[in-house]
Amino acid sequence: MNILMVLTSHDQLGNTGHKTGFWLEEFAAPYYVFKDAGATLTLASPLGGQPPLDPKSDEAGAQTEATGRFKKDPETQKALAHTVKLDTVSATDYDAVFYPGGHGPLWDLAEDQKSIELIETFYAAGKPVAAVCHAPGVLRHVKAANGEPLVKGKSVAGFTNTEEEAVQLTNVVPFLVEDMLKENGGTYSKGADWAPYVVSAGNLITGQNPASSELAAHELLKQLAK
Image (cartoon, rainbow, N blue to C red; front, side, top):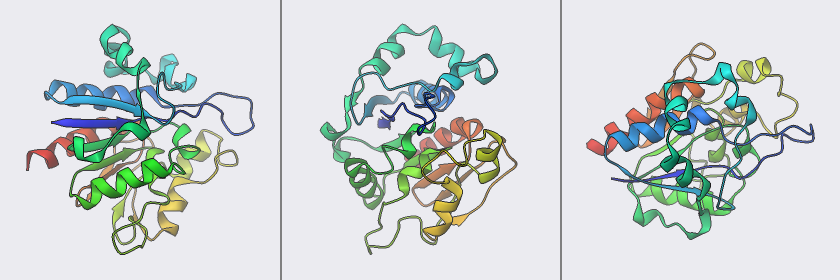
């Protein structure tokens, strides 16, 4: 199993002067689910190198078993510090792709032409495409083979408007994930705020929030086992 994980390179939270990036739990939990299942992992980001970590995801209240494991794992820290440039990867080399969230992807990966093409290629080939929390935002401009939005008519989940409101960033983000998925014709559904919630539409897997990342990773493995 060769799995590609795509992380953001964007570190500015709009014009607030605060930092953002990827959310640690949403990288660490899936990473270890895949690693423990024997997968070979490649980490990529638009700029390559060390992707920016959302400092809030490093605070005490955001820590989990997976983030604790990451902090004691120099090998994975090194892999993360040396992500390959996104424009050097080819979908043909991988069996699946996973996008961790954090607010960063809303600015770069959602608009990144290479990322859009990659998702379209993975999806068309029937390979699992998974994204959690803010990462379903990367589907914003992704098209199906018929030229319509990929999410149109499909069951999708993603960070809710009420969760965005709770972190007080509704007026900072370039777009709201829930609204975008609905506007693109997705059949959006959600669980309780901050509770694990994942939906699959064929080989498209989307999760609602950080708590959904491990569940989404297991769902991806389930699809690969078919």
